[in-house]
Image 1: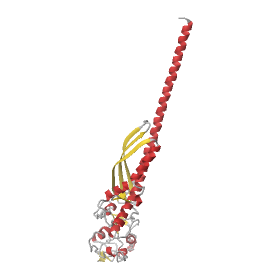
Image 2 (image 1 turned 120 degrees about the vertical axis):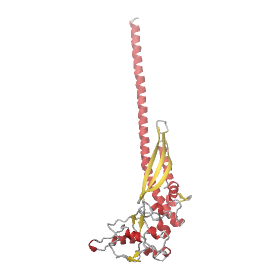
Image 3 (image 1 turned 180 degrees about the vertical axis):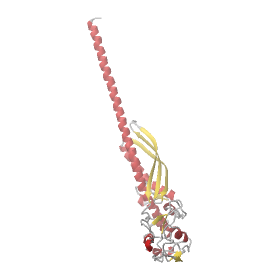
Image 4 (image 1 turned 135 degrees about the vertical axis):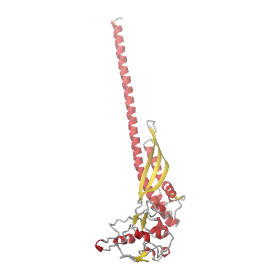
Length: 322
C-alpha cells in the first residue's frame, strides 16, 4: 500500500472516531437533559401534592366549621327539630353545601366539593392531570372540645407530556373545635342562644379558711360555661337530642332565670335540676337540693351532681332539700 493510501485510511479512521465521539456525546447530553426534565417535573408534581395535602386540611377545617353553623341554623330556624342522623347531615352539608337537598347560604363556595373544583382548575396551570377521589368521609369526637373530620383519598397525578405519573392513597384528618359554636340542645329545647365556652376558673367552691366562696359556681351558672363530663352527651349527640352519656360529653348549668322571662316560660321547669341534659330530658321534679349558700334561688341540683364531687359542693357549702 502506498503512502497516500495509508494516509487516507488514517484520516478516515480519525474522522470516524470524531464523528462517533460527537454522536455519543450528543446522545449522552440528550439523555441527561431528559433525566433533568423528568426530575424537575417530578419535584414540581410532588410540591403540588404537598400543597394539596396542606390546603385540603385547611379547606376541610373551613367547610367543617361552617357545616356545624349551618346545622345549628337549620334546626333552630328551619326545622325547629333535632336531626335524625347528625353525621349523615354533616357529610351532606360538608361535601355539597346542602341539607336535605336544600342549599345553605353560609356554605356558598365553602363546601369541600367546591374546593376540589378549584384544585382541579389550578392543576391545569401545572399541565398535569390530577384527581383526588374522596372515597370515605367520617366525623367523630376525639375529645370533648374537638371533632375530627377524616377523609380518605385515592390520588392520581400525571404529567401531560408523559414524563412522570403516580398513584397513591392519602388520609387527611382535620380537627374542628366546638368552642364558640351554638349548643343545638338549647336551640331546640329552650330558644336560648348558648355558645360552648369551657369553664376556665381555678375553682367552683373555695372553702379554705371557711371562706364559703362560691364565685366559681355562680360564674358557671350565670355565664353558661361548660365542663367536660363523661355522664353527659357529646356536642354531636346534642344535634339529635340524644341525652345519653358519652366519653366526650359536656355539660352546663341552665340559667333558668333567663327561661323564667316572658317569651321563654314554655321551657321553664321550676323544680328541675339545672344540669342541662337533666333539665331538658322531659322529666320533671328532678331537683333535690336548693338554697345553696351564696347562690340564687334558681340554682337547683339533683342528688347525683351534688354528691359527685365534680363541683366541690358536698361538705364545703350549705344547702337544703327542695
